[in-house]
Length: 336
Ligand code: KG4
Ligand code: ZN
Image 1 (cartoon, rainbow, N blue to C red):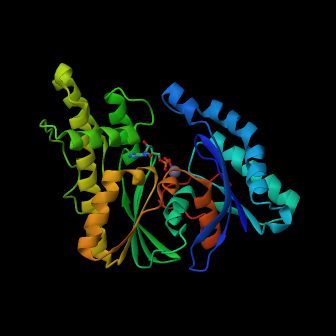
Image 2 (image 1 turned 120 degrees about the vertical axis):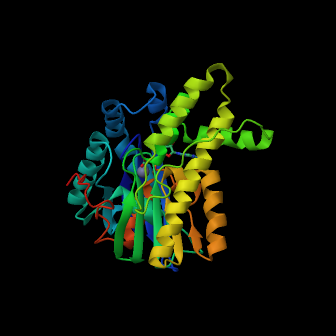
């Protein structure tokens, strides 16, 4: 089994994982200490405070994870850690601690790219795992990337956002509506209510770059359109209608880009990942579209969409030599 640590943002997670009989990943145990309440209190991440919290929590979290599985260091084949991208203070806490464990326990140290791990969260399953070729869409708070997974170890970057990540756009729109950070899940709630209430107000928002030939995307224009709408409507603004219009615009752009990527590559599988993949409306839109195309659709269980240690373990178990690859080629965000 592999001990994996995730610390990129406002939580520390530890997990013990192993490969299962279908070539996927089984979670033996998992522990977490979240500082999301601190992030929410300040309305965003305060890197110094978060890194200090993580420095104090990392050893207890690892101990708890080992204890729950009744595992000892002899049971561990290797230790894995997120090597970026993420907030440097948080990453350093994880990397330095895991380096020390690897040294003390004489175990191999596996470095894992956080975005590769998000994609491989789709393999945390006991019954069904993706096949190839596949198109991967990563939609998180900091990243929006489209990848062609030709084979298990042959990934090709197709495109991504040129400005804001989808999650960032969700969080900014939430802020414009006066909702706390991070607001993605709250936008989903408003959107649900809009549908339930059968509200009449309909706002029209742009679908940036939807007809652009490339696989690149842009979401900052959509956020600006919402800013303008909020200003124009002032006292009459219907937040639920904004949430709905925004979500539909995002859904349409994402679905269109992925369908084009599937057509261009002949992919037979589709995998979605990242915190925004937890969004019910986006999940439903993709499931329906992929079914109509006859493409196998995979979206992780909700708890493996947002940041989690099992996905780091999944990458270490499934792709040990390649887990540290940069998903987006020009980014160089490794710690070591
Ligand atoms: O993957 P993640 O946990 O962290 C990063 O690696 O960035 O993603 C966090 C992002 C936040 O922007 C959050 O608002 C968004 O995921 N998110 C959602 C939902 N749940 C989390 N966005 C839309 N709908 C949701 N249900
Ligand atoms: Zn993430």
